[in-house]
Image (cartoon, rainbow, N blue to C red; front, side):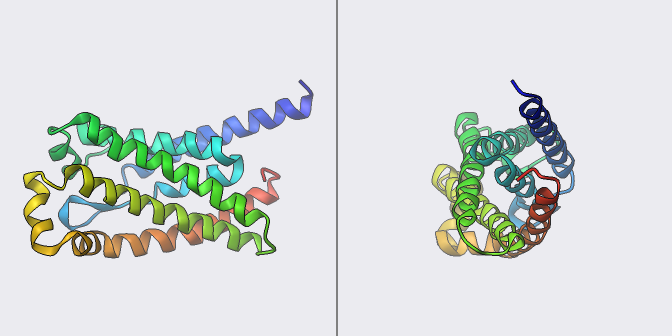
Length: 201
């Protein structure tokens, strides 16, 4: 193994460790919203990992995000009121809803950036679109699986029946999703430029 290859591996492992640490910090700064949901910015480290290290990075940090989210159902790394209520019905389904959805976010964010890499778009735009996509996919998969797997529970059934699936999702995450996507786009765009200057992409 050449010295440059070894240095690159160490740098990437260090970046992964830093992003995982950022995830832990962000787990405690969620902004509570109605219906037991909250605004979270944890998809930003996922997007950054996907940009810097492609699919493997996206999956690793996406998986870390999902694991932290799952553990919050038990009061570890913060607390999710809705998760704590629903995990009693099926820890396995909650693991799928919390963990698998975030793996998918990491995978798709990496694929989005790979697709954009073949275009002439400015680097900031490539990063911003990747960050926006990560936040969009996070909302889509999280809420989609929430309704699919737990829509018939007493906590959700009546509200979904009264509003309909689409309106339930819109009213639950409308503000959350907009804020998350905009912030993710702005921060990830800047991070992408910084990664280029640091020769990590």
